[in-house]
Image 1 (cartoon, rainbow, N blue to C red):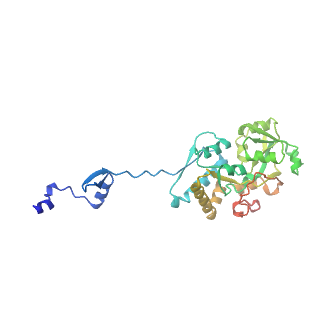
Image 2 (cartoon, helix red, strand yellow):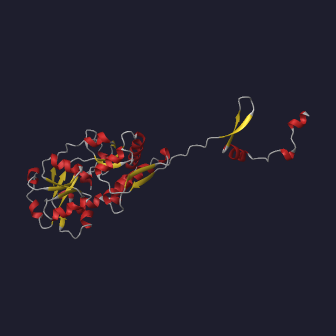
Image 3 (cartoon, one colour):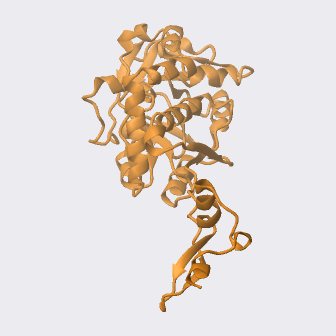
Length: 319
């Protein structure tokens, strides 16, 4: 009798399972649990929690948007260079034409994960900056879009006081608008970017200062307008632009910082910059070395700016 209890007939036995089959077949859906009285019962095991895929949401960047194509490429580079440590991550664009101020609010509210802006003291209070300048200070080198035929008018401009006799045009919400006003330069403020060019044509103001990498493409896109790039002047001030994340997004900030540092160290950043922005070609095309430079103060420059790290800034004499 004892033997019959311990040895069951072959036809009563459950089909044999391999080690792999036992693990996959039993443990995936059911678990054997001991009851309080020493018996056994089958209970459903909790399914493992699904791993949420890593996505970094940013505002929409149009394919023809050359100004923002480079920051987006750097963001993707930083995520790729940290994938082995943090896991793969994708960039996801949120549709819609989002202003600078709205972009900042959406990051604060968690609707976006990252954005990029020229740094100001106020912005560093609102968001967490990754203190590596994206354009390496390029936003602080400014040339002017002017009306064709008025080039001689600017030959007399030698100082900031001379420039104050003319009126600039800028956009509401731009850091550069704050800076022009802080330097007491008369400024006409527009509510939309496209309207600036028609306002300039219609003499609402005299010049539109743009960062070195911006006006060539912008005028090419508006080739029917009687506008050109002023050939002899350049404004300069320190203007670091960073990736920003929500104040409490410490892990994402560290991942982006690490990825950017790796891209600088191995030369990937510089390769991307030249392939997308073409800084060396722009410097030659705009004859940067022969321009008269008017220095401007930047009272919005945060004290956190990494001015001592030369590898983070462009040296115009090296191009």
